[in-house]
Length: 118
Image 1 (cartoon, helix red, strand yellow):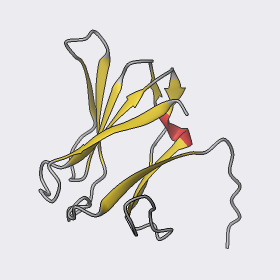
Image 2: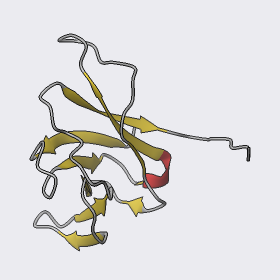
Image 3: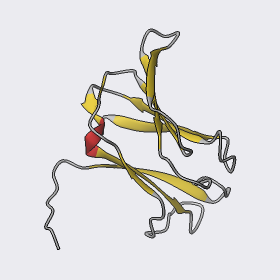
Image 4: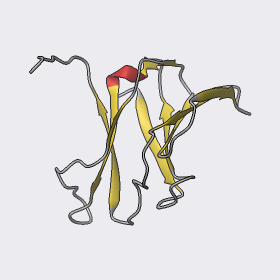
């Protein structure tokens, strides 16, 4: 997997919470989905996915950070002190996602998908 979850920040605070990801190699975000679920025990998570964010197409370089903010806003990118880029992406939700200490963030990678109009 070319991305990794680093940390969930400001849990339960609608205007400031976000999940921090880092690119371990160059990749396109369109192949990634973030979701939240809960822990069912110390070592396992529920298979019930709640809020889901499928990233739009955007190439990120190795070492770049992606901050997926829960609230609404305009996506931005800026150089950080390490010389890589921080991409701030807004989920656009009206309520906190990471509002419980039992919440878990899940990162999925998709290599291909198929759709069919209903």
